[in-house]
Length: 71
Image (cartoon, rainbow, N blue to C red):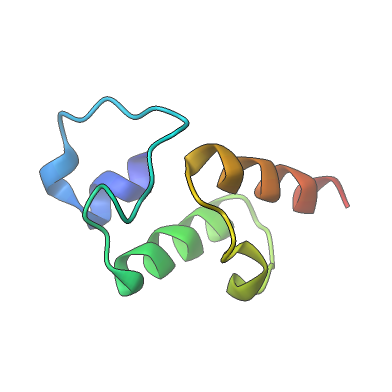
């Protein structure tokens, strides 16, 4: 959640849960894209953002990223 706090510093004290939605936490579409791109870069993954667009929460995003890293 380091990248989320970097983009949205107002979440510094927030305790993240797998069911949290970046949108519900106040991230607009540009914020979400930046958070995801930073995460992809830190994981050395090259995945088109459109392939991650269906993730409804942090848990689903993590599952998608895990699946992409295993392939």
